[in-house]
Length: 149
Image (cartoon, rainbow, N blue to C red; front, side):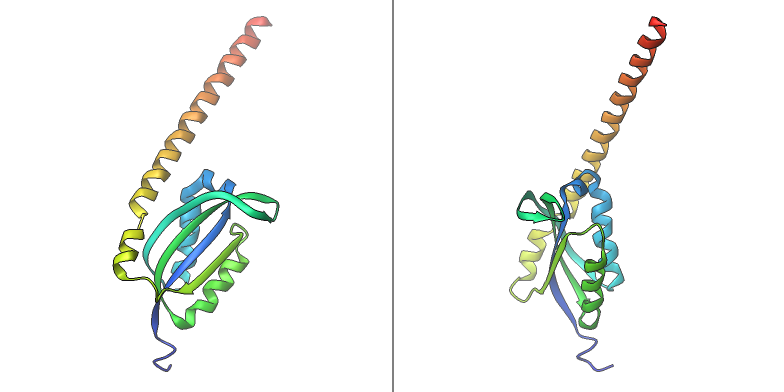
């Protein structure tokens, strides 16, 4: 391999998922991390950029979840990363560009992994609480039905 083929650059990746992916944010983040891992990428920063309405429908989705990542990866692995993104059934769109315009300080400021982990935990608690309340409602309904019978 030439030195050009083994060159490692810093990249910025924006990954778009359907709004339904926000319900299981942990799995969505893990999916992005797995795609980056397969490209031998070192994640420098990863954050939930936004959840917003899309300018136009993509595969029937009107809203989307954006994840922003800064990572270092070998230049020759980038084609494989883009192929994995295109083949992903979970991901609607992706864009990966070289991040020459971003300083290391800006990348550190953009790192929202701790905040993202907190949001994942909070959503898991809310889902568990909703499931428990749903189980309680179901149990009460079954008790009322058996009392009527």
